[in-house]
Image 1 (cartoon, rainbow, N blue to C red):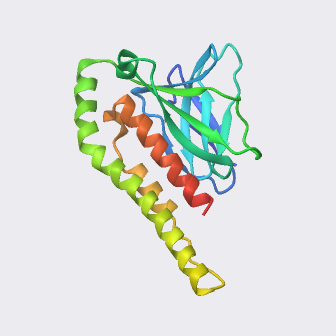
Image 2: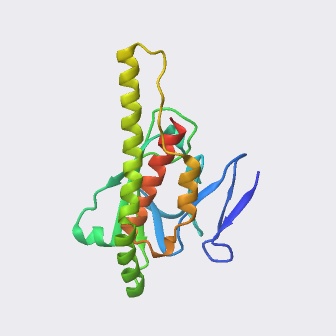
Length: 212
């Protein structure tokens, strides 16, 4: 079991013990704040996506002793965008939630949302706005890949039923390609809504692949 440190040498340094065969795909960019929100409780986290799970690690000082949360892809139904309460809130925060299946080995606090915010400096805003435009087509292609794989699987199943075949081919996105695409991105220029949408897309791709 390997231990990996994040934001090493800073006041928000955290670490994670990786499981056997676990590989890191995505780590929260330094310029993005991600928080967990359950009722009136809110705490900042380092969010990591591996080939097995979405992990949230409470950042120091963590005076409330919030635990590390693990959302295993096999236990996730879907990741979903959540509406902001107002336009002004949407301009500052991006919200998403994780819908879980009824049983599993995941460990997390029930309910609540994830909140994503970008560094509010002017240059960061301008760079993130440009990145939103540049990367919009990439996210659209990823969403289309998931949709296409699902539709092809449904079509194969329908043909198998009508022909009396004993099996059909399931089509799903390739996890190794997902990991390669994720590791080649420059997240430092992503805006808060773009990071939110990317996390949703990445989690849903991993869920589709693991549960295929």
